[in-house]
Image 1 (cartoon, rainbow, N blue to C red):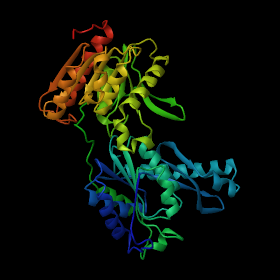
Image 2 (tube, rainbow, N blue to C red):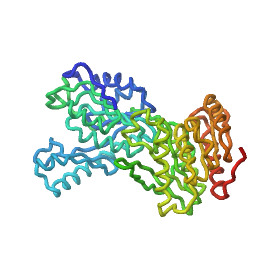
Image 3 (tube, rainbow, N blue to C red):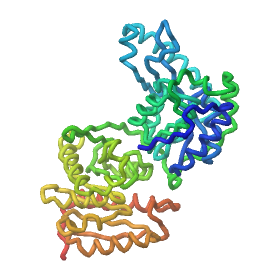
Length: 453
């Protein structure tokens, strides 16, 4: 988690546009991956437009509404967002003596207004895809943080890889609070006492609905990054699975096609998650072949913020084994053979977990994997193993060839010509998916055979 703040804790901005230009310079320093700038309308739009310009990123919105105390509407007791998101500050509700009925009335009224604004905005600007991308949520200032918290949850629910909150001004205690929910907070000024957002602008005129719509009409889109994925999204239902790990828990998305022949558990690589567009696309191809999938986050949101955790292969493998046991008990897939699909460092965790003699893993597929990180366990792997590597990923090609020499199980190294580490080239990811479908389909249907050393 990183918080950026300026040296001038009591800075006064000329207007929203100038504040946005300054904010854009700070946000650009983070070098975000495929960023999407998401404004909180209305006041956040002029600021966000300048941030998007600085990043060369598309501009979109997250529509949220404050839930104000009935007799003091400017005091937030919570917020709502797109997709049914609700954030309630129970301390304010209790202190203001707001009844459950009153809270429900306020929420119903604000939900109607949110839906109206959403219809209006989407009539001129289609939603920008967030899956696997960096969401930058921008407002002209933050007072209590209720609406920003709702926006963070909306962004994560829509698949954002990470979330940055960016604002010209906010009180220090609110910035500290947001640190626990966002991956990064960029705030130019943190005055104490704070008073109100408008206090910190010389010109703070209301932003009209027409101005919001004009800014969005002028914005450009970049579409989905990552390989021009060529098929439509699956319509199969997604069931969120929570797996306890003592005081922690990890989360996965289970998708089961009709009459599945096996289950593939995905172990994601460094900097990735169950929302990875590449792994989700491969998973959809597996569904078409009758394979159930569990896209699993082996790290909690907090743990994933420390990059060193993605190299804790033993810890990840232990969690993968626990998750595998949990999968075996799910009625939708009980009794089916299980395989692992690992990417990057996730492939090392998959091979480490498969080396457990009690694991009973039928097959492993590695995409651009780092099997060298599990080198001490490769000789114990009995699951049929397919190592897929991009032909232009020279270092990883050699690491996989060396790892293959340590495997005594049935195995194959598949080189995809012209592909780099992320398989972004046209047709490269399709070759990965096709190979995975064939490998899992064959080894789920047939008894495993031990290869000669």
